[in-house]
Image (cartoon, rainbow, N blue to C red; front, side, top):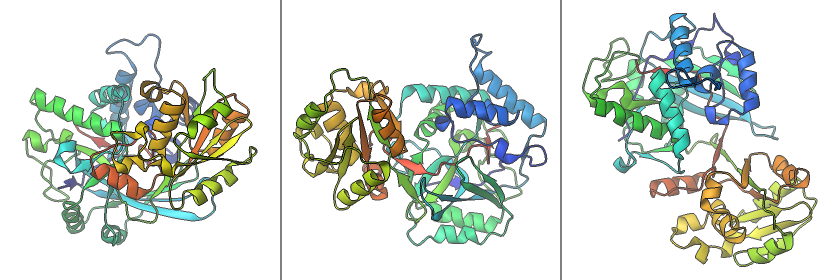
Length: 453
């Protein structure tokens, strides 16, 4: 049973800042170049809190996390962040075009708090593995600031779109910002207590799938367990204990109802037309003995291999992949002067996929990792996990450029994972390889903030 609640979000005061200059992409999508750009955009850009600059003189208690906590404290005291007066949900609408596309799409969701549950409870499901290092980093930030600055991206099923229709009835004037990718983000407060209760009731029957934010979700679980072990009691703050109405503070003090039992989430209907998953392409580099002929011959142990035009561009590659993968699965392997279309239909059942469910064996990305990266090229799981010989690219043209001009060994272009596959894998308690899904667009950080204290 999914438990959600409204909250009194902290939000940037539009009289003090220009919103487009202070919000950011999720922390793990911020490149060093983007970090510098965010720093230059405004002295109050959220990057100073969620991904501050490390210094050579850093030491425990005087480090990047301490600076994040100081910025957050000072900005709250100085009125850069203002807390909403009423417990609210927040309708979140994104309007966008796909990279290289022209048709405008719309994705709707709502921001609220969701109870963090152990996976074993069968309420929240993951679809990707996590790594220890990012979780340790996010835990240090959460300990220091005691706040969530970006929403977890969570999916629920509502084929009729009933919840989106309910929320669309709100007439609150939205706050709007356009990000660096041209995506328009609109956030509108929902304070009607009867509507909030209706949405909460309909969400109770839902199972939730994490789309983006696996590391931050598991960080929230770890922090919850840490606070439970400390015997912490709830404080008033901006979050729920037992929601009693839009104007009433929450007063329960049991650990089960404490603010750290919740995390800030954007809930999106997985059955909506505006939910888009893009492919993430792989580029292999640094293999000294790589040979296109040897690769082709060894790949035939798993796939039917057809050589195609070596000068293929990104648009043509995407078209070939869509056509070949319409009824099955397909991959494109491109080297500096060769290109191969791999029909992956015969890979399922091979020894390289032993021990995996049929659901996983049918995934292009699983076949790519197990049969090609590990089996054919001999790159270990550990090396893949640590990205020693592999880079990831959303843009197929950029991936092709890596092999044609930057000296990489081979680019693997893929079709996107289907939402049905994500759902089936997650509800079966299984996971995909890292960076299997790229839900587009991302949720901006800093639109709403959930302060635990």
